[in-house]
Image (cartoon, rainbow over all chains, first blue to last red; front, side, top):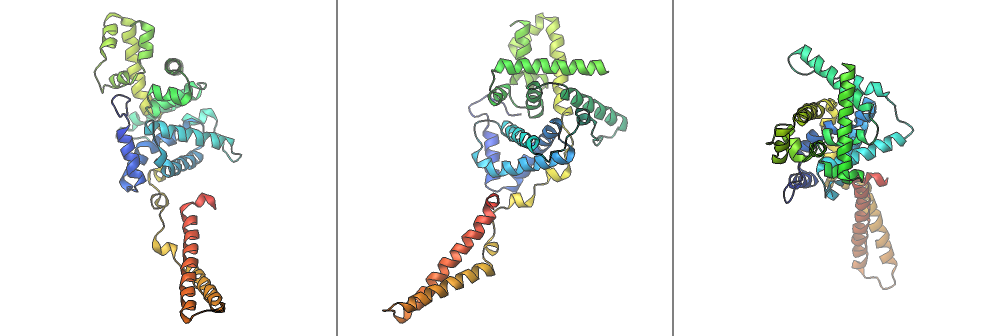
Length: 188
Length: 142
């Protein structure tokens, strides 16, 4: 997790970006492995069909590769969150988009992982319930929760991104988390 | 610190790390939790939610997404990709045109045509290679 504490909180992110710009394949792989799943998940949570989510995620990564030279002033997570948000907005403006009903966001088939199949299925069901609950939240709470929990973006950076006071972001986070909790308790 | 302040304090980075068990409890939070049972419940719920939300919101990405496309990693075209028969043809044509022009000059010396040929060839080749490089380096322009 990249925190804001210290003189240069994003030194590691900047070093990774510089290595990517220099053409270091290992650095690029590291970036893709660190953020690829989050970008894809962001797209799916926004309601994109799996194929569209994959396309938009690829576009985000290609766009990131091309503009990494200009990356500055925030964590890589926040920077990629911003890129992904814009791409998703572009996608919803395009006439070729495929819509997924909100119930389908959590209903997509996921690979059960782990050695215990029952536990893996229970975990997959829990994930589906949480994603479905997230889909019931309104904006900007949903976007703020995605930035905070999925990208692990610090509240200060979310506030800058959303152009709202830090305490407003925290209030949205708190109300959103409690709403998710209530939704999950009601359904169980 | 009162209970409302603690609710907002939960989302600071030091508290997030503490909720995930990656850092010790901040002193001000510890002091409040020590005297407020309701906030101990709030903290415990937040710890559960932080752990599960960070994990459960992640979808399994398709494997193709985690494999960096080679076209992204190697955008710089090689020398062989930049100079082919079309570029050489442009160079020869430009050289021939300039050599002919130099030959038509009234006070042309014998070496003038050769100089004209090589100069024209160099200019023609460079222009063709730059055009090819421009297409290869900035595909969005095409």
